[in-house]
Length: 178
Figure 1: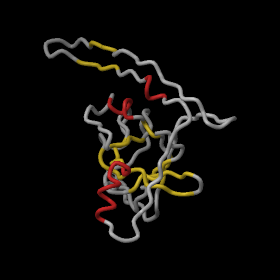
Figure 2: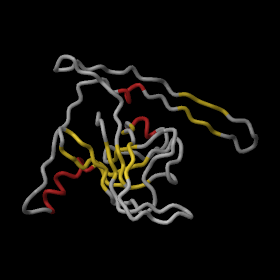
Figure 3: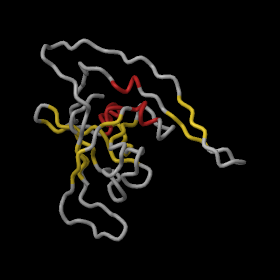
Figure 4: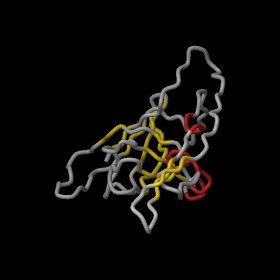
């Protein structure tokens, strides 16, 4: 996916020792490719989409579950995800994980018999930077306190040719409302 802007919407955010805000909250976060996300969560599937800062600090949190992750394309808001889970709230290297709405198009359309929602196909014309992701894992042996770092092989990125002229590729970013 090559989304430019995502938002997570919810009416409140619960944090330890802070009251829930009474107004709608939002934050911009980048979409994190599934290969990159698998470096943090080994259980990531094609039914999921990840979003958040790898440095941490911005994310959905308790109370946001079930809220929408939306993307603005051509002045239209499109729901790309549903808040699902994460490790803590805005923890470094652990982006938020969302249910990928597009994977459930058939099921959604069988549940809604009238006024069915529209689904939009999206094709990127840029380079998928997620193809060149390399995860490094750190493990600590049980009998020692030495840390061993192992790096996996990096795959070669595939570049697609843009179908229009003067196009630029930017790292996807997004907004989360909570």
